[in-house]
Image (cartoon, rainbow, N blue to C red):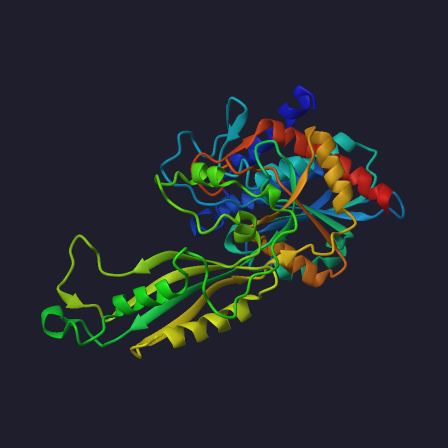
Length: 437
């Protein structure tokens, strides 16, 4: 890609990053709407007839550009909403900042870079578009896409396609291209424990009356084994990946997380642990403060727990298994409640879609190195929603971000080389998909 082409991509990305489209913050609703309008205008500039639509939630952009008669249709997916920001950034999160070989800003990787890649791919193809193109850029992916299904249903005629390209995963490394072939599902729950109507003196009742916090700690501990692996009967792992070589190494995981010296990982089977096995994470606990504790037995406590699920396990199946497990582990007869906060099924391209090989070849050519296939821990709600409505569609999940992009965190960034190669690869994918049909 020429310097002028990359500068054009960065100009698009700069405009998008400047809009603080934080979908989780109601006070930013106007910014999310402005972001949708900007995305729609940018796509109109590359020949896509777009409109901003809503189904009661955040606005999305849908559109279409017709290709040659009889050509396949490829749906270009991305999202224009972003995560909130904290005060630990080294740059202004809503000003795209170039430092060395990376561009920093909220959404610079997740997923406004995906929008920029789509735009530049269409520019590179110009008038020689080999396929028909549909566009869907949603505005609520970061809040689990609650109205996306309704948007797809309403605009099915515009969005119907043979293949979907979704650059919303993570590459195998910096400038190391990958296609994601499996996504773990998710189930977030609030587990509540109640043992009494009121707090009572710990000096009088301790040793006899169970306290809610102690019961909760026992229940949370029972969710994993001594190594930290999920241990909930009824939530079984999927088969181990056939090729685990693209998984992050132990050293890469330690470096990305900044682990303390001597910390042991759950196992050395990292690909299976990250892609096809369940996991348990305690996200938060409601409990008395440690800086001003009262000498009482706590009557109620709660925790929010996130289960990552193998692609074959539905959130409903996991919820049922969790409830059975907690009931079996509730040895003192406390009141235990489970409230589902979030659920999303995983996905697996177990049959290897016909678009995968053309996509891998295009990535390899654009990046100058072999592209790989891998699984991803996080889910993309859109994939499940779309495949349920269009059963024959073939997802191709690519990435612009890499393990060092810090998506969702401070100083989010994208590699400039990856940004350019992603657009070139997508243009190549569209040519190859047209030729394969």
